Picture 1 (tube, rainbow, N blue to C red):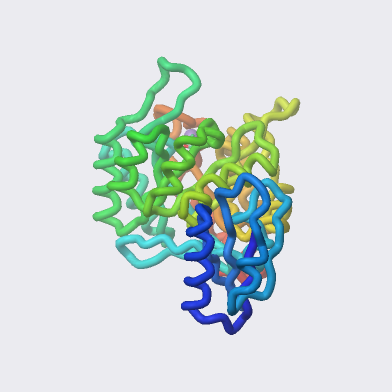
Picture 2: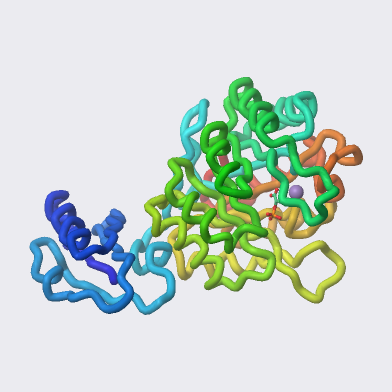
Length: 342
Ligand code: PEP
Ligand code: MN
């Protein structure tokens, strides 16, 4: 259910409608748009009695939402959501006209490794640094990440270079720590349908980067995001990272067609990860160009200064010089699209 407010509705009118919704035992989500505010209602198992809300001042109409997701839908908010990521060097914007570049190693390995990569990435002008301290590995015998000491290394990188830190939480315990040390909580492909983790992320104060599950349909992807918004965290960025298909020449099949499909249905920004999406270093640059051309709101790219020595995903990691070239091309493509790269 969606309550559409008049364009000139006052804050008190919006508040009064939200309070009435809460007294019905439901949850109200006021989502301001440029023209009007819409109030999404969640927590209802059946139809809501419209009469009581429709007669309140400032309300235009109540619309039943038949889709399995509501808050992520364009029905609730017509214009693109621009997620604001506070970082030590100022806010980074993602979505709308803003394209966000996130780069760094697959995993935090050592302080020296992170600083070597971070110093070269800083020189390119990007503002968001990625690196996993908790690694969800297919084999229990593969490197699992440094955990808390990895987060501490990331926070040193943050302090030294002013980067916003994007790092993965794999369970509620690691999410508590990621919330303390980082700027964006990443939820990985393997956890896209870990509903208790999604709910916990929905109660977090930081923006969330939600990666698409490796065999998730578009509706499943959007419903996973809906879990986060339904708990009150509206700062969600989606990320396409490739899906499993019969194709055997790359690690995954990067589904770039999902970008315009998401944009048609949802106001949330969507980034693309060409590293996990292809699994091969030589494909990262061409797929990055394509992702930006198709409308991606950002790129998540694995960069390592010594990929042959990387403890995870060296085969798909590019070196900082290659990243600088990638960024240069992305900037040129973005100019054609009248978008800004940060
Ligand atoms: C990652 O980005 O570090 C990662 C593990 O990716 P995914 O969850 O997409 O496999
Ligand atoms: Mn990786």
